[in-house]
Length: 582
Image: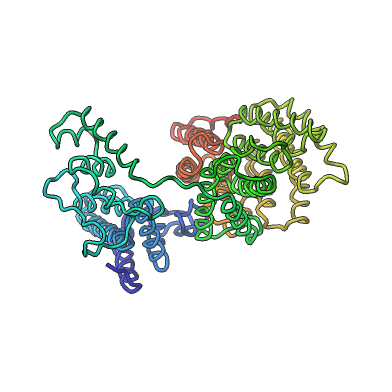
């Protein structure tokens, strides 16, 4: 079933109208000056004027989300989501997306009817796109099971290719399209075929055993034997050619350079395509036998992989960067001598661990790297030293870090030192000063970094925005909320414009804006509640993107704990709790 533009617009407008009727009577007023976390893929939602009836921020986001052209983008996203995770053909995915839209429509209509009757309308949908994705995917998988019940004797088998029955194209090619899945399964006995397809569809072994009337152990035994027979039927695994890996690495880096070497400002669609290229490069690196590259090829592949991993780490996608550099690192041990590119890969590997909060692991890697660099070049690379001292800060070894940074800053003060690296070291050292309680010194150091990066880069470059964010973060951590707000208010708008309002950096600025505002107005329950709600949503996003152990997640949790304490203090008339420690 195709979804043309008129159908989408009409459907989304109808849904919007129904939701609007429900919302007009449900939600309390909100303040115009409050900012909420924006919906995924959407823009910040403007709140209603104080004293006027209007939708809540969450539900207003859903209204905003379903209006054209956002409604079209939402449905396109749901279709791609079902195609990727189903897996599903485009036609099946569109059917599932339309079903999800209909379910949303019916749910809103039901809420409207219940509101008129004075009944409980149930829990609102906080994230309509995520809700539609879940409903559509569940619908598709349920439809798939109905079409192909592997445990039913009467279930029709799809005809094998070439039998005259046309089948829509789908995910039925195994091993680079050389062997059709139906033909492969056709070699199996009926009972074995049912077992295997049942497991592919996620049916528990216990249910399969019960339906077939056999023991669980027998099911497991047959599955092992069936997989073994299938494995023998597959063609020999072909490893990617070394030239293909080199060409792919050069191509992906060229794409990155077309964006000025920056992922942080890349559009969402372009970012998704770039991520697919990274995944393919990682697959090729992992599949290519270690030792296949010559010296020149190794230098190219290692250097390009390091460049890409560094860009991913800066973009707060440390896990993808770590996976890529790990795939490249397996080729290091076959080099006769380690050169600059090999050392760079090792440095990026350690940096990825450090940015993920694995400071001890990173310290071990960096100390080994520094020793190897001293043997080869008589001195460790300044960036290796910078990263090493940063791991000491992460472990709370501030005195050691201060001593190291003092020596590093002196060496980078030489005219021959790279200015970009010197500014980066000054920025990290400023954070150390803040941790040592020397907040005013830290702010002055950050001011120098902002000035230098504005001159070398530009005022709205992501690196400059980082330097503008850091002093505000240090001020908020020291309880100087009013000074922090003066920096964060203009920065938040700039980050949303340059990087997008859902970028991890933008969410960090939004988080600290809330923290600073609560410090200024701790007794305003509305301010505290909005901050607590948004930080909880930010934490949910951070855990999904970065994992629960990421330093940003730890930081958000400690501020959430403090905000919860402020809420309780206001409720019971107690003093505002002290700020959390680092």
